[in-house]
Image 1 (cartoon, rainbow, N blue to C red):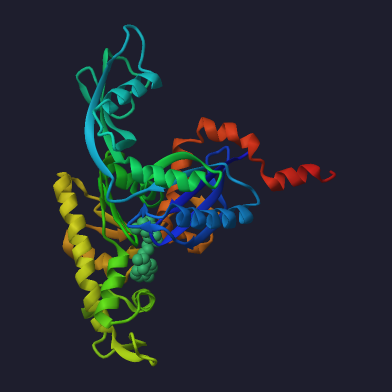
Image 2 (cartoon, rainbow, N blue to C red):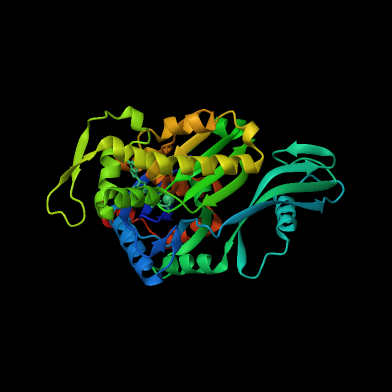
Amino acid sequence: MSDIIAAIDVGTTKICTFIAEASPEGRLRLIGAGRVRSQGLRRGVVVNVSAASQAIAESIELAEHEAGTTIRNAYVGIVGGHISSHNGDGAVAIPRGRSITRQDVERALDAARAIPVPSDREIIHTIARSFTIDQQEGVQEPIGMHGYRLEVNAHIITGATAAISNLVKCIQSNGVAIEELVLEPLASGEAVLTADERDMGVALADIGGGTTDVAIFLEGSVWHTIVLDIGGDNLTRDLAVGLRVPFDTAEQLKIRYGHALPDWVAEDENVSAAAFGDAQSQPISRRYIAEILEARTEEILHLIQREIKRSGYDGLLPAGVVLTGGSAQLQGAKELGRAIFRLPVRTGAPEGIANAHRQWLTPAHATGMGLLLWGLRHGPSESVRRSSPLVPNVREWLQGLLPG
Ligand SMILES: Nc1ncnc2c1ncn2[C@@H]1O[C@H](COP(=O)(O)OP(=O)(O)OP(=O)(O)O)[C@@H](O)[C@H]1O
Ligand SMILES: [Mg+2]
C-alpha cells in the first residue's frame, strides 16, 4: 500500500493543502489539492487563530474531497520575522571497535542543540552541515565510518514559542497532527533546486506575499537561512497608494500588467482602472506602474543581496540565485535580479510530483509541493507508517467492498 503524505502551506495570501501518494519506489503522485484565500495571518504569522483555523479547515476539506481520503498528519510550513538561525557544533565519543551509527549522529546533533535557548524560543530544525571524524573534516555521510570522535557542525533554526504554538493550534484544531514543522524556504528548496545547484552553491529566495525567505545551500545542505518581513503585498500597497486605487484593484493591475523594468514597457501604453471615488475607469500609464514596482522590487532584491553578503557565502554561489514564490512571477524580476546580484538568476517552479495540474507547478506553490517532497525525503516517518492503517484510502476501501 502506498503511503499518504500531506502538506499544509499556511501563507500570508493563500493557504494550500496538498495530499500525495508515495509509491514504494519513492515517487510522489498528487491526489488532492485545496487552495483558499488566507485569513488571520500577517507577514507569515498567525494573528487570529480562529480565522486562520477556519481557512485551514476549508483548504483541508477541498484537498480531502479531491483525494477521497482524510488526513491525520501533515508537514506544515513555518515562516515569519521571529525565525532566526545560527550555526553550532556538537561532539561525541565513539566506543572503540565499532563504526558510527545513526544513533551516534543523533547524539552529536543533540549535543549541538544543547545550547541555551531563551525561554520564549524553540528549536525548529537542527540540520547537519558537515561532520568531522577525528581530524578528518568535511565528511558528508559519517554512518558506517570508523573513528573515535564524531563532531557535527549544524545549522540551528529557532522560532518564537508563541508564534509556533498559534500555528500548531490552528492545525491541530482541525484534527490534524503535525508530522513536522518545516521552515518554508527549506521546503521550497526541495521543490525547485537541482541536486547540482545545492552541491555547487546556490541562494534560494522565496518572495511571497508577506515575507521573503532566503536559504543558502552549499555542498548539498543548507548553510544559512534568513526571513525578511517584506514581500509582494508591499508592491501591491505601493501601487494602491501611488495610483490611489483599492488594494484589490492594485493587486489585479500588478499581476496583469506589472513589470519590474519600466524601460521594457512602451511609453504610451495605458491600462484602465477606477481610482477611489471614481465611478469610471481612468487610463493609467503602464510605465508608471512599472516605475512604482521597480523601486520596491529593487529594495527587496537589495535586501536579499545584503543578507547573502552578510552570510559570508557570497563568493561561493556559482549556481547563483533561484527566485521562487508568487512574486518571482513579476515580469522583469529575474532580469532586475541579474543586474543587482551579478550572478546567474532563474525563476524556480516546483518539479518532481506526478499528476499535478499545471496551476500547482507555479512558483507560488513551491513551498506546498516542497513540503510533500520534504516528507518523502525525510520520511515517510514512523508516525506516517503507523497512522496509515488508520487512514484508509477511501477508494481502496470501497474497492475492497466491491465483488471481484
Ligand atoms: N504574476 C504575478 N506578478 C507579480 N506578482 C504576483 C504574480 N502572481 C502572484 N504574485 C504575487 O505573489 C504574492 C503571493 O505569493 P505566494 O503565494 O508565494 O505568497 P504566500 O505564500 O501566500 O505568502 P508568504 O510566503 O509571504 O507567507 C502576492 O503578493 C501576489 O500579488
Ligand atoms: Mg509562501
